[in-house]
Image (cartoon, rainbow, N blue to C red):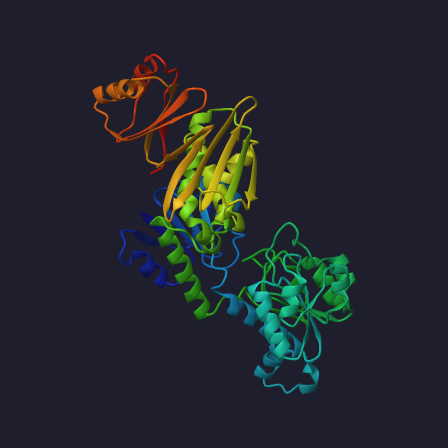
Length: 528
């Protein structure tokens, strides 16, 4: 398998990818969209930083792509939706540059407060203008933090040590989390703006955060507020900030990211000369951070290509290790149940119901839901864990999950119910002992069947010689029966489930159907 590493990424990434495994790695410079489209087809993985824009066109050209790794925090230069549709995993390194980004935001705040860039420029010219560069202390000032993830919370920790009062506005965290860090939680931006002497941004750029700071929100801030943005360009309306800086509403700003990177010549902020500190997206630009993100993403790419799970998947959050670990022993069973049920049920599926019992009832079962969906779509679609959920949505299939505390006879139990307008199929599986999983019911039949690759499902009348007649047909075609399970219902109908060593073709199935007392025979193929 081949990996393309582009942009300026520490060469340790190549060493990690090559070490002890049969992977080929090419290190190439940043390319245009057309150049990358020409090359990407031959690669199984792509590793980038912020310079390469991975567009839908590139993703569609990457016919063999399995994973895209962004050596950094954000993935706004990757079309994640397009990657998800194609079943391509997108990973990043959310922790690798946390300290570097937080430190840069703090450095920008202090440089802005003490006029360090302008004082340096003046003194470097041999001037002595002490009175011209009188600054302001951050001690006892109110710092407003938007975004309280790893970076924002580290900024808060240092700011508290500097004697600042910290106010946090973040709809994705809780009051309890914020207050446990010694900060003040504010649940409304309207209240937040007027509290802050300094405001620092630590949130991704999304539809909700684009131009979060604009003319209207600036008007609600304190006169003389100071603003720091080391997160993402576009969160601030640069024209509105320029006007506020020129009017004095905003005393000063420290900006590391821009709406049009790397071409910043068109930024309105360049028109402000006295009260801004501008740097060229240096938040993660430390030797330690670059090393950390290169190691992290290279290891994830290698793990995925070798069949493992990514540590920081962006578009499959339900398969993060902390979610997957508690239910990992049931993943194969869940996928097999989805496959088994769908191959019995057939087409025109309108809903999927998943119910768990026993030990599973107290766990996050989102990974099992995705495994079931992958199984359901395995036979008809180019599906994997990345796009299984999206396929269900696109097909208009309603998916519901439920839990029951009922223990029953099993350690953990999963029931999958598929519904069409006039048809319903129920298949259940369980762990019957440690690390032993079985299919325990098929519609109204109670069973105990090992999930194997090749299976025959034969409903039949419960009368003498049925097993012998079926076995004769199978044997005449040179097919070995590895295991057979027969179960009877109260109405004298029975179900024969046979595990075979090879696939069973239509000719064999048709001969079995000719046996008196058998109306149908179905071959089921499961993921081994």
